[in-house]
Image (tube, rainbow, N blue to C red; front, side):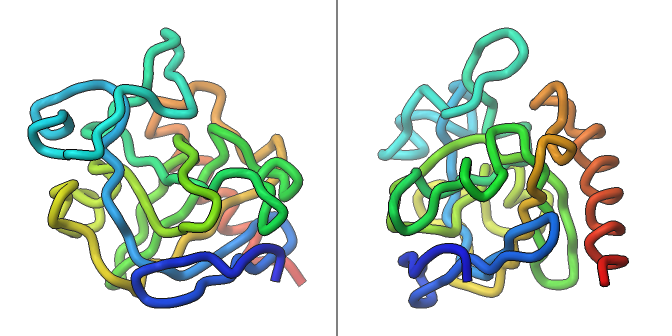
Length: 176
């Protein structure tokens, strides 16, 4: 265990470390923060904020409605994502109900809570993306790949995240 425990809808969750990755299984709350869209705004999400921890290549907040990304807990004595070798643009594999989707770390959440991803990530996994009523209460596995070699150059380049994620997953599976 490299971090935790964190609060999740399904109970306490720890982050486990592996060579080249950290992983956890939790719920999925829907993050609709960032660029305002028809899907993500104050009308659809009472907790909506117009910023994300990461910015796109134009310096704008990320677009949760179109970019699959994951929210990592804020830095604390419980877990420091920077010390773990993660950062914004790190590639993450998210697994739910037999489906795998790749995205990036794109936002930072509360220090004690884990299990949140963007509207677009939920859509890609077949999870109800409604920021007020959607998400799932458990059964979502998150594998965040560590190290500078696990970061995409352009955070909004989803194809690059998928390609890099597949490569990093193969390395993890081949590790002794």
